[in-house]
View 1 (cartoon, one colour):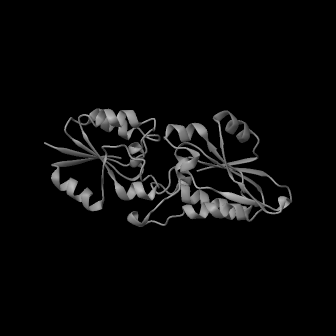
View 2: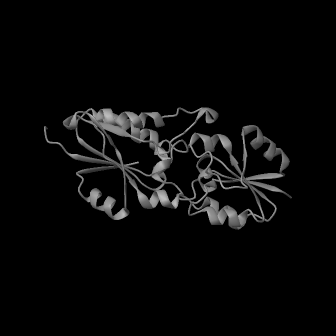
View 3: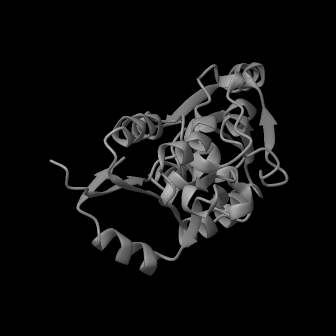
Length: 135
Length: 101
């Protein structure tokens, strides 16, 4: 069981209105312990999960958005956001958290984790996965 | 008879907003709550439909839900943001509430 598989998590729901976003994040973090090749995709309303400046005090729910910043420490650094989904919602990458990871092969240089990709690029990436988990 | 309509679903996931806009009378009020506040975003694919509705209907968005999603400052001008107390006030000011779940 030493074979590394390519896992893709597809996130398509906005946070807080439903439990999908939080559930996905929990599964991603649990899965990270198994040292698989993990990729995250944020499409449709899923792009809202990464929006910065979330303040949930008023709705008395846990703000889990700071947890995304920890993904780099779990070697999760392939985070794809669909360009078309951002545009349909009037958002740009500047509205999202700036997520980074440290590359140990390059003297722990800090690199961006989020990459905005087109639908076509995302479709191609999805086709290369061994396991796809949808939330 | 004045009606308050609430919409709690994202316009990108469900057609609750579309149905609400089609089936609400001029002069009625629409309050966007929970994932429904996504329809309040400026520059989104849904903005034009909301702006058209705002010509004849009053549109509100629940501030707590806007803030939770980090969308402060991205709400269409003219959409009035109300807090939970304002939500209760709106309910009391209207004769009936219709929830587009």
